[in-house]
Each structure stands twice: as C-alpha cells, then as structure tokens.
Image: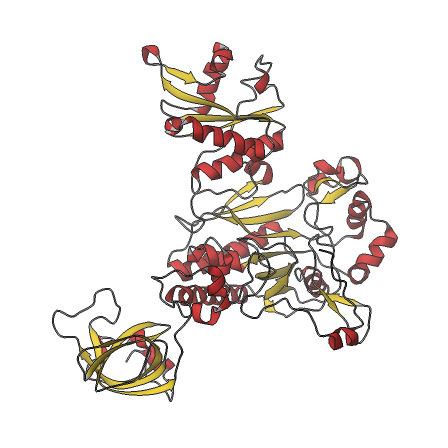
Length: 587
C-alpha cells in the first residue's frame, strides 16, 4: 500500500478504490464507496464496480448479493491480477480486481434521478436540483479537487511572502463600490440594515492602518448583480493588501501566486507575465481583457483614410482586423458580421476580400473597392499586410467605439474556449481614473474613490480629470478578467482632490466614509492591494466556460437555487420580529 493510501486509512477502510494497484497483489484490503455498476455472471457470481472520489475498482463477489447502483457498501477482499485478456487499459485499476469479497451494505439507495456517469449529460436544472448526486460525477470531483489544489497553492504563496490571514466581517456597512448589495435586516435595531460585503476593500485598508502590514484571506463576497457565465451572486476571491509597497510589488507577488497555482494544476510554471497599458490593450485588442492566445490585432488605418472622399471612412478613427483565409466566407456570413457590428453601435462594417490581381499584385473585392483611390487601396494593403484569400474588416467611428466593436469581432471570429490552449496571463495597467460623467456632470470613478492617481497626472484632477490615469491594474487570463487592484490613497490632500473631482462634499464624504477617513488621520501607511477571482481562475484551469461548474452549490441564471428552493418568503412571524412588511409587486 502506498504512503498516500496509508495516510488515508481509517477504521472503516484500508485504501481508496482508485489507489489499489499491482503493488498490492495478494494483500487483503477493505474499501468503501458507491456501487457504480453491478453485473451478474451466472447465478452465483457478480462483478461490482466500486467507486469513490479516486476512481473505480472491480470486485468479484461469489454468491448472491443484493446491491444496486449507488448503494453505499464496504468490501473486504484480496487483491488479484486480472486473468490474461481481461485487463482494462482505460481504468487506472484495470490490471487488478478484488477477490474473496465480503460485502456489507452501509446504506441502501433509490434509483438516482440524475446520472452520476460523465458519459450521460443531464439537463442543468436537474443537475442543480440534485447537486449532491451531480457532485459524485468524476468530472465534478475533479473540478472540486482542482479548486482545493489552487486554494492551497495560493495560501502557501501568501505565507511565503509574509502575509497574515485575517477574516473580515460578513455583516458590514454599505460601501461605495457601485454594485447592488444584499441587505440584512437587524433584529436588535429594527429599521436598520447591514449589507453583505461586495469585497473586504475598506476593512483591509483599516487593517493596514492597524499595522497588520500584509493581509490576505480567501474571502467570500456577494453582489446583487444578474448572474451570468462568469458571475454569481456569491463568489470567492484571494484578497490581499500590503503596506509600504507600490504597484510593481503587488504585481510581482500576485504573479508569483498565480504561477504557483498554474504549476500545481498543470505541472508547468508559466512564463513571465506580459504587461501593457490600458491604452495599448484597447488599441491592439479592442478590450481591456485581451486574449493573447491568438493574433488578429487591430490595425490603425486613420492615416490611410485621412481626408478621404469615401463617406464610410469619414470618422475620427478608422481601424481594421484581418481574418486570415477569411475570403471564403459567404455573403450571408459577412452580412451577419455587419449586423453584429451595427448591434454594437457602429454605423456599419466595411469589408474587403483580398484576391490575386494582375501581374502578381493583389485585388480588392468589396462594394467600396471602386470608391477607393489608388493611394488608399495601396495604403490599406500595406498597413494590414493582408494577402490573397484574406478578409479585411474595417470600422470607422470614434476611437473607443471603433476599438470595442472590432475587439468584439476579433474574439467572435478568432477566439476559442476560455480553458483551451495555453494559459496566457497579462497585466493591464494605467487605467483611466474616471469613466465618463454622471447626470450632474461629475466624473465617475472607474475603480473606487480611494484609488491613487498616476503620479504624473495628479494636477489633472482639478483641470482635466477625464484625462487622468490611475495606479490601478487588472490581471487577465485567456480573455477573462481575473481581478483588479490599485495603489490606495493615503494622503489627505490627494483624497480631497479626488472627492472634489467626483463632486463629493466634505460633509458627504464624512457621512459615507467617515470611519475610514477618521482612521487615516491617525497615520495611514502607503498601501496597495489586489483580489483574484478564484471561481474564474479555477474554471479556466478546469476548462469550463461557466463558473457554476466549479462551485459546489451555485445559483441558476435567474438567481434561484433548485436544490433548496431559495429564495423563499419568510414567515409572517419572522417578518414581524424584524419589523419588516413586504410589498407584493403588481403583476
């Protein structure tokens, strides 16, 4: 028996089903698990495939035994090599089987309403209704254990970097982070509410004031936002904050931690993580969540069409992407791309099929081809580097719109499943400090109001705030944002300047953030932090497109829980005790 098996031996079992092997031949073992299959061989011989989280092992039982699928049983017997010609190469235990078996039924089971076999895919609503059965599937067992492996590797990395694990409150005060919060009524102070934290943001900054220096936790966070493939009401993140550090320090620490996680799961440590500014990401990939696993970068054609007489290209910015060998796309597919671009806000989508021209040159096939000057035609071909058989797609619009539309088309045409292929991490830095204006003309914080502006842009807070950059940074993996962080404001003069830019008065700031600002008056160290979305990280390493597949008990897209029936109405007596009266919405 291996050391791993011995460590897991208990009074009820000596080994695990998937760990028994040829080294154990002629040893007597005791196994526990679920009956995966039972096959009769004549009247007095049965084969039972016994399953636990490590895998299957075949047990040969003499005599009648009354067990069926998903019965929980204990089997004691002797490990034997399988007879010649009966070895199962698809099974880790396929060279051996258990003989001279004594079977004890530990718990009977009704026929399961959902398959626990990966070969049969059940409807998701049924899977979630019987999640405790769905979790028995090898696929789900694998996902849950990969999640555990990642959590363990991240904890070890944090401890190696000198971080202290601290639990922050789940009952908190409303925070200014933008997303809707779940409210919790107070029984002792009727009419007042706690909220469940969107993140431990303010609490961890208070820990820095408290001298904890380096904090982390595997934190549970909650946001009342519509669920989708990469978002749930409740989620988990590796949350961290450190004092006397800057942006580069946090990036180095987090890069090391996620590299540990990658190595723990895949056995391979990723190369150094690329870094690019938000502006570069938008210009090159049309998004602040660039997927670096494939090319098709955006190309600027603004200079080519400067002063053009083609109305379709008369816009501040003209951008393009090249779909290699895309010239074979039919007109129906191209029209669908045009509709998609217009649905994203573009006035249209110009396209050019690249063909073989006379004398070995290249030709353009497009409704707009005849309207281009020779200079524009040659400039388009030179700038894009397109060759015969390619398809060039062009959007002319305001800068942000042109980039985002083509960025969407880039992923639509060239993207792949988020978990497929290599794991390409990238840091995106120097995000805008503000994003647009509110109804009153005040800038809207792109991150949160405690984000430190870029040192070169502090003066812009009072003159041109929308041009100011921040010291915030995102970590992206295969086109999914894994998390965000920033250097925090710890100086009163800069914090006041940011509040003024946001239109937050001194009185309002005190009312909303008084407990944090008050703490800062007693000596706040320079500090910065980050949070890694664990559900997304695990989903990518598990090859899943939906984080529900890596969460033990997730909610559906509508926010319901088919297993427990939540959310449910509270009893009148409970509402009365809380001082709450519900209003039934009109149909």
